[in-house]
Amino acid sequence: MRAALPLAALCLAAAFAANAGDGKIDYDHQDQWQAAHDTAQSPIDIVTHDAAPARDDEPLALSFDHTHAPMEAIDNGHAVEVETHATQATIRGRHFTLAQFHFHAQSEHTLDGKHFPLEGHYVFKAQDGRLAVVGVMYEIGKPNAQAQAVLDSLAHKRNAPHEVDIDGLLPAKRGYYHYLGSLTTPPLTENVEWYVLPAPVTMSKQQVDAFVAHYRHNNRNVQPLNGRPLVRYGG
Image (tube, rainbow, N blue to C red):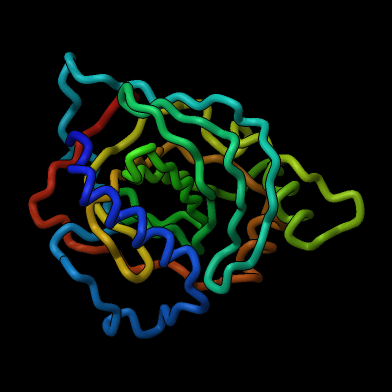
């Protein structure tokens, strides 16, 4: 799944910019959402035993640099979103920059039909405009200091942190499932690379409840895979 042609990449970047500016999205009437193309949509149910293992000669690495970055947490009208642009990623040998990350409740992707309480989408952009989204699952467990930093910033609490360490919001195990899909909010633009990490990260119940208090149902329904390759990288 190599990079798209420049024109397609530019169109995708424009669609992403338009999507980022959208206000409220009606998740109760998803059947009315329209996509220019609708055969390679996201999210999907990741059926783990159907995923093909990556070939030995494929680049596997998913690595992040400059994870300690300035941030601004906002409510964009349909999700809790964090604006931060310092974090870099190397994804299968290619360079991307983090544009923003945001949260969905409950998770948009499912693993063997299972939802998680929250899913984070880390939206990375290449220089040619191509998008790669890293999906991270969150479950209830130990408190997460970086999640609290986001919540404190969102609430504009006194002395709220102005920085976040992205690494603390990602799992230690960086194996992932990869497929080619779409944005999960209108305009639902396709040709987006997805990298879904199955190892969950914990937040306390109070932290999960704080995110859910903003948006209890901002997850798109799972979409048919329609024969697309689903590849497993790492453990």
